[in-house]
Amino acid sequence: MSLVAPRRKTRVLNVGDVRIGGDNPIVVQSMATADTRDPKATLEQIAKLADAGCEIVRIAVPDRKAAAALPDIVPYSPVPLIADIHFEHTLALKALQAGIHGLRLNPGNIRKEEDVREVVALAKERGTPIRIGVNFGSVAPMPKEFVDEMAEQNATQIELRAEWLVRSALGHIRILEDLDFYDTKVSLKAFEVPVLLEAYQRFAKLPNDYPLHLGVTEAGT
Image 1 (cartoon, one colour):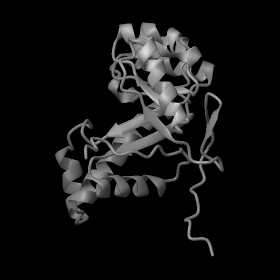
Image 2: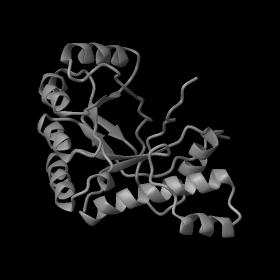
Image 3: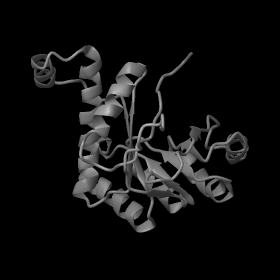
Image 4: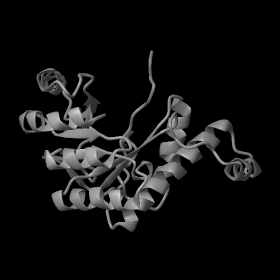
């Protein structure tokens, strides 16, 4: 008798030459802490992560200088790279143009609809997947109506926080689906492990087949 729970069936995404989801093995990803504006230091750290067993590495792209360095990093990386983008859609465009293998991007954080359309169109053209990365420390405040709704269900604080993570992710996903984009994976990160587990379990029960990216945020010690 197998002691391993059956895997949730998901769509398959290609992050460079690494396949995620479906019946493919679970993939290990970590992130570089080197300044992306320094290609040499970033590539050295990526190589160390790859040697340690990482199959995908996320790099931060916080500004235009970091985006401008990507052509000196992406082609020389031993593993596929994910560009972590916040708010500024032009950074996502520059990352895609540099050949990045995946984006970590929440479309709801980009204010203009036409900017989201531009990013999604280029990601679709290049076959580049997008990770919706919801983080409890940075989601929008819970509206009173939502809190009241959960109170009527006698929800615990763990359930309340987990459900808000799920609904926040669904809002971002809906933006991509409305643009006919489905090469998406989802993370629902929290610094409290019970909240994290509850959020992933709730999302996994919904009628969707998006692969899940598992991770703890603000983990500290």
